[in-house]
Length: 234
Image (cartoon, rainbow, N blue to C red; front, side):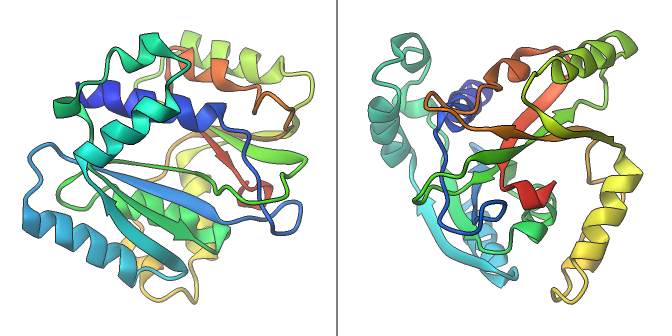
């Protein structure tokens, strides 16, 4: 059921009409850490302390299961089928934070995903005003994705009529890009390890009044996740 809760949260993130008050291709990044069901109080505190020690991280806050459930009833009030799958006892416990330097947000996400007591980490462009005219989209592939699934994902991304700066990044290229961006950011570059990054398709996409217009990519076999980010993160 934890995976159901995470899927619900990710569905909400993809449906958001995200916005930012920074330059057109910049923006803060909202980071959400999903804690394990059996995370101990010590692990919960350690996750928050680890986040606070990261460069350019602000506003670290814990959201309890009860708080998540009550918020979800509001967030998903127009999606009863999704809400029906979420029960109070299955709601995840979350730690939220804001990364003010989007260039290192992905590295922070990857490092935090390896911390004891963490089930997973998601990130997206943070809400602010005014809305940007376009966002960056990162479509991560599962390591187990077959050649047929990879071809289908490539075709789906290539078929987006308004996508620009479309490119594929393998694991080695991702690690090198992130390592370069982490230079001068404390010990973040040493915490980042070569196996951590994912293969991904990355592109810029315009926003419309209904949201990102790319949520269907999450349903493709072989896709591990879809993140909406500031364009400068690509």
